[in-house]
Length: 476
Image (cartoon, rainbow, N blue to C red):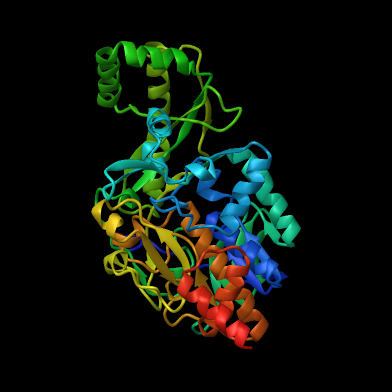
């Protein structure tokens, strides 16, 4: 739309903007990346502000109803992503607001447990075929209660001393040459400014990149997960025992019904909610292909079409599928599931080569299990992430800690999920606090200091890096 030569323009009058807050670090976006960024920056001594456009934190994990935190372990059951994401799971566990396999079952080939997750239609998130042993294994993946998580995230921000601005859009960065000096925000109080020494873009969509003048990569391939919206919703009061009996006793009739709803444009698949006290809840996660998920006309189209299909699917299941007779639409995502988009071009660009290289970067800030690439995953089970992938080229005072991290689509397709973004955030927030304390640009921080702090926060880094840090510490 912006490139349409027939698109009219007007000139906005200049005006003075009130500075509502001055901080060390301002984080734009309270999704998974923003959670990790704000908590780690504040806990490491930085005066931190978090700006969130909705009235809750969590982003896709709460408002987007993507209440699945997957791929925390590799296929053998070794946990690789920890730190803040594990802390959140632990806090939710105390409230009975999460579900995950017991630790002793991570990587198990136990057929009963494997079938339990397959029966729940959760195999994509919990089960992988280990071609090295010819058996299916259980991954460490967690399901969460989004409403309890919203509450716990507020508690964690309060405990850390983070100043939160809800119902506020971070609209543009405040620029001085090639340096970001803060952000403009919009809310019911009008247009305001927050000044900061470091800004972290956790918008998911990289909203600050273009106005900051950062180089971006917008390439996308049709058919990818990241080239689609999600419009999730839940149905409640489903008699799953009755449904399971129908599906097993009359498979042909069940199959015909699913073909019918699919042909009508509805959702033929759902996931069973396994969280405690969520009995009778099922999740639908329909996708809507789109190559430009930041276009408002596409967003509006999916919102309208998605709700029509919610109603169509609900009416069909209630009227025709045993077990759904007394069901109801329990919840629909107030936050559209945007899964991909533009990515920053950083000091290092992650691509297909990095999925198979097994390289341990000198500036590694996270290890991600690669469970989704079949034979490649079997031979290269883990992928390291360098700090440079969070640092934009040429632009100072800015870090990117969300799905817009520096990556080509081949890499972004697999490593932009909820736990990955929390890990980006934990590294970026910690790095920002170091930069503020030292009075330097984030790109110039001492990587070993960053890694040492991450390890102390429960982040899992390669043994080679941990041993080097330990050796230097003993020598000093």
